[in-house]
Image (tube, chains in turn brown, orange):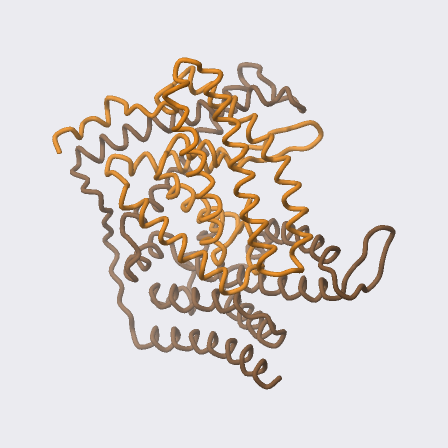
Length: 253
Length: 213
């Protein structure tokens, strides 16, 4: 789980969640919007420093990045061989293009920086705190409430699914390889949906009886100290520097 | 099926967020109080279901179940899509935060299109369960193709260099669309057998508690 290390102590953990959300979200958007190598490399450096400051264990970071990185590499492979432009070399029926390679490198570095900042944002606060910060910025409360209750039910659904698979195995329905698997899996899927549907009815009745008004409430209170303003502003300055590198160098050219 | 982090340029990221905000705002406005738990519990169930791998021949695929989400949840399915994509980004770093807007629009519109198409035939085919399930399967497959087309168009528009990548993407998703259609057909058929109101959309007695409004 991404917020497994939300209880550590670091400059990022102690930062006011509102400042953290605002400044890191802006930095993520800025990272996504730049394309010139100096800006991209500067942003990547900043992302690495931020993740080091967050004290989230390196092994966890690598573990989190592994799957999306493999997907990224597959996508990038197609980009390198289909982008067109100047060819670098050809192997059998595959041609590798210089422009594609350059673009691929930029996309890879950008994606990695964004993912690192993402881990720094969601890995250093519990999700309910981030949701509370989101509603501070005017994000509809009903949506944050929906997100939080979905989060909870994802784990319950996982448990349900696990139980259904165990039950199927105990009844001797071995999940064979090949198409024979599909029938059993479809039945498990349908049962999971029906169970969840019935669960949602019971949940609604329970909420209704407790006087649910369509709004979710929390008890967390935020207090920003001067040090939070300093740290938040520093992060905003990093974003400004990345943009400066992108547009200043473009103008100079 | 979603666009990864770092691929789209700023204008597409912002445009995606603007469009997704508009869609979400409409869905929230139309969301009834009694549908809130349904969207979150079913949203979670669809999220978890989409992680099941189906072994098809030598390979295995995992589905998006986007059509089924649309059919079961109706107009609020866009909220389930948004939360699903958000948690895919938060839990597995798939998709991403910058592309959340764009992905919500492509997947959400496809869920809504399937819902709309299915609701047109639902009443007419209510007695013929196999035919109704088949229609659901076909619409779900077409929904995947619609989302694929939107993603491919976005990729090709955002940079000429992505055109080849968009073509490869479309071909692989075309195969997924067939698998998704077949599985959706089977699941709908099974649901019609054990809990028809999930597909036929009649509200169960418990949620009629609200008649005192």
